[in-house]
Amino acid sequence: MGGALPGWGVVPYRASKAAVIHFTKCAAIDFGSYSVRVNCINPGQIMTEMSPFPEPGMSADTVERIKQALVPPMTVNQPLKVLGLPEDIAQAALYLASDRSRFVTGTELNVDGGHSAGDNTNHLQAIMLARLEGK
Image (cartoon, rainbow, N blue to C red; front, top):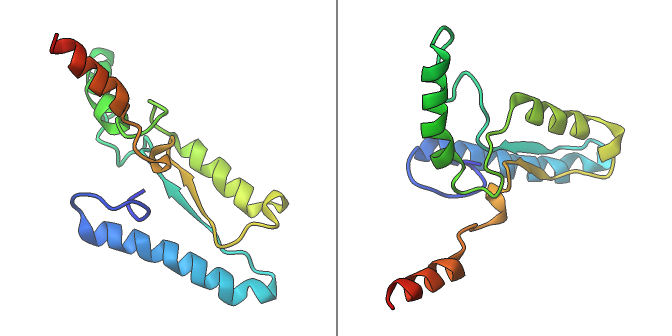
């Protein structure tokens, strides 16, 4: 989601991801007359070897402790409170490569647990709780 949503830090990373999104849309326009479809996938928090997760050989207790500590902050901004798997991205790529997406071009497919849907903070709940605490 680094290219679809602005955020703090890693500016070159986010800028390059945003460029891919823009390239996708421009290429879809340029090559559509040749029946070439151009789309991109924006992955969210996906559990991979690059994730800050345990290394092979760690005890099950250590692995569980690390997951308990890392998953909540990594999923705080998405409605689905789980990390994605590489298979989730593969299924999105399979869809885009198939005839099922024959009328899809110039699209950025967000596979991100809903992160790109917007602010999932329940501000009304926070206001009501603050009011109750003040009584």
